[in-house]
Every structure is written in C-alpha cells, then in structure tokens.
Image 1: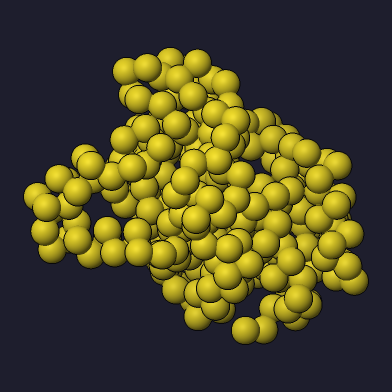
Image 2: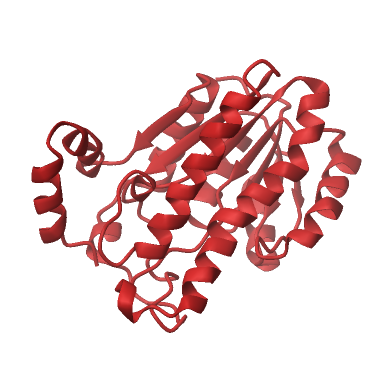
Length: 262
C-alpha cells in the first residue's frame, strides 16, 4: 500500500471507523482532510494523526449547500483530492412501524443524499486530473435488510445502486469507485443510532460490542482500496450471510428472522 503524499478526505472522521481510517492513512503518509460535525473531536483526531498533515474541516452531510465551499477550501489547501472516503452517517435501531417518517427521511438525507452530493462536488476535479477514487463505507445491510434497520438498510441499498452505476459511467476516466461493507465493528454506531422518535439509542448492542476492532477494519479497508477493489465485505462470521443469501435464500430468510440484531 502506498498512500504517501495522497490527499485523503474522510467524512465521519471524529470517531469509530472514520478515526481508525484517519490513523491508518496517516501511518501511510497521506495528507488528511478530517470532516464531521464535531470540531472538538476532529481536533483530537488531528493531534492523534501527527505528524501527518491534516486539515480539520467541519461538515454536516445534511447541508449539501455547503459542499462547494468545502471542496474549494480543500483545493485551496492541497490543490486536489486523491481519495474521498464517504464514511459519515447514522444508524438505526427501531421497527419500521414504530419509526416516524421524519426519521426515515433523516437517515436518507445523511446516509444517502449526503455522500452522493459530496461525491458530485468532488468528482469534477478528479475527472479533470483523470485520477482519484471515491470510497463508500456502506454496510452488510446494504446487501440485505435486517429487523430494526429498515431505513438504514434502504439508504445503504441506495448507495450501492448509485455508486455501481457511477463506476460503470466513469470506467475509462481514471477515477475508481470502491464500496466497503462493514459487518459488526466495535464502535459507538449503536449508541448513536436513531430510535423511532429520533432519539439516540444510547447503548451499545451486544453484536457491536463483540465486533471487529476498528484498527483491524481500517487495515483491511486500506488494502482493498490499494488493490482497486470494486466491493469488499469486512467483518466476522456475519459476512457469510452474503454467501448464504446467494446460495440458500429461503434458509437465509429464516435465519435472519431469528437473528439477534438489537
């Protein structure tokens, strides 16, 4: 893996997977742009990534009208963007019928429209240079839906549809697209997940608590990006669900109904 000197923009960089990716890229000599809504935590991550050069750039994925100015700020600092890592997002822990439509819309706005809009803002610069890669941190539920994740799964499924299409459209441009599907990773994702009325769950679920360490996830993710992979699943035994769904969809549906996912 050689990311020395590359400009890597990571959303959701203030904690969890985003922070782990920032640390991993910093260890490879990349120059970083760290974005999320929490500027204080971004500054902590920036300090942890020293001596790598890192720009702290607060960003709200639900405010796409700010993206053009953000891209201009990155270009003014670094001249270009080599990698955009669309990692920021919100999870969900509520039954579909108990979830307000406002929560459904919030998840789509942040988890789908935000990455799409930011990618559209960054892509022209990459196409002009005929170089770059857009990375999308999706989820295993981007490939199959589970209970308590209806809106989250919908947003992640939508990401696959959009970015698979985009990859095909820009195939000869020199710009690539990599979709990464994490399984259970030991982060605060469930703590911050939205419940049916929009409040955070406030607790870590058992599966997340026993999930893959973020640093291990980041190491595998960087390898997949360096290998120009189109798509990769990273996690533990739960990743076998992809194969089970393909080979035995009826059995998979029965297993999923009994799965402890909350």
